[in-house]
Image 1 (cartoon, one colour):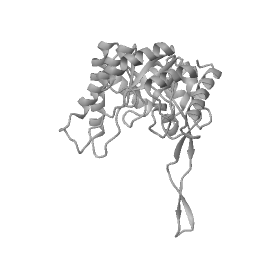
Image 2: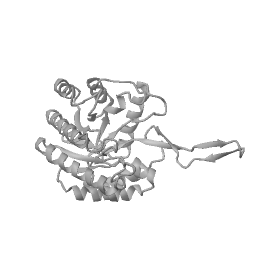
Image 3: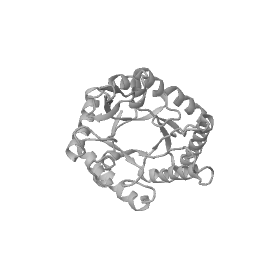
Image 4: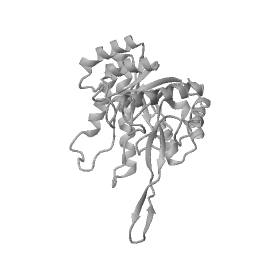
Length: 297
């Protein structure tokens, strides 16, 4: 497996220190990462800025001796109820992914990660499913001319469970459509990580990793002079290997299933220890050491 560092970790969205994209690439190389995943939005590599940025990014990759394995697209293929058919919401996202594919070709990048959709209450689930499969199929057809493969990450509601995701992949039926299969979602939902990873592995080209703890939540009920347990825990990011996710089982399943692609570390939520550069770097180094110690790279 190829260890990658995701630029979103240094983009500042969750209070972290911010590095420009070229600074991030140099930083990743110094941390010992041979490859990176780049966020396809500002402040990093939005298609709106790509004509100016792509040559600088390509030069930075060459200088740091780092490859860009993946561009991360931020899609939500829901059709908002308030929008209806008035705004071409899905077409805009297909165009966004196609634009990223042109940039990917400039950088020598072969994979674009996408999300499916969050369910919209009141909309027919079958219609939402069909909208996703149809849009992803068109994305695949449009990016194929650039030598790009789409990787569907198991993040959003539609096609979330591993069985549902494999069903969706079969329905899309494109050679350049694969999976970006992660552990945190099936772990939170109670799937068997080894079995899920092994089943997904033959179709998976990337995995994006972070570790978490579950923090129990309670609410005080003064009329009862007691606390009421809340059904959903708060989930907090922690250094890799210190959370509740059984990554040994997960990576063993991926390996036994034949996966040998990009394994990306991300810090994409508030992190134990804070967002200062020193803590981000320590967590990035911990992931790399964990992967090497487990002989997964």
